[in-house]
Length: 341
Image 1 (cartoon, rainbow, N blue to C red):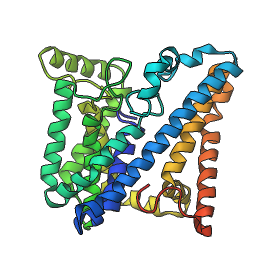
Image 2: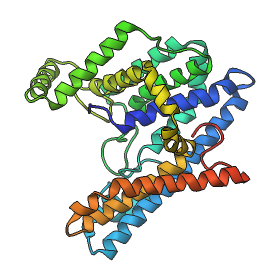
Image 3: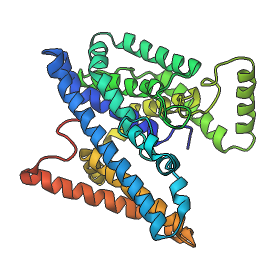
């Protein structure tokens, strides 16, 4: 439907959740007392990331052996794990080597480590934090700032210096909600400007000739010296078209009362259940996705099986959430964390 995808939604909603869950604690008391719950959450995410990374390697290695498909060992950035284990394995717990489909939590861990400082600034000087975030995003794209990716060349696929801008915008939104305010007020002019951009993106993507023409104009701007993350669709550095699409979509949805009513409807209760146990559901969905990739890559005719991915994946995630909810109501505690999931 546009340029952005679930990754932008993940970081924006994560920022909102962090602002809602932790801004009260960071706004009063000592800094350390407010920061410790955030850092404990970051540690939990780190452990889940290692768990998913281990199982990604096991699932693909097991699939390669079971189905006699050695090509699986080349997928999702696994090649170096088996070709250069002495260099790659130590890089895994250091977050310097990340596998495809298992590479979003490391960025979230890093952002949570910085979140207490961001919240403190965001509570007192929200516009200063927003401006600093934009400057860091711009500098990261201009000078290609990133964390290393060892032993491969380049950096993290989700560059934390760039993706922080979406997280921070969500964080400021969450802090505002906690105060009973909106970080970006409802404005008729801004609303219709955002709607207009979303319509333009639809035409850019789906109307024949429009995308080719606009991409050509962006290429001309790039040739004239405009920085690449302004005139491209790059995901690692959150190029402007992706960034504006994600923020426009979030703003339009936030301005529509029907969205809030739909989210509160009884029919939306399964989605709320998934949200209450978000980290556990995310991990289960990731493992299901990895398993399906192995099965589909090894199948003689994967087309019929591909139709099973969404319903089976939804069944797995809802089943896990139901079990976790039953355990929570039975007094066993919540698998997703008490506040921010």
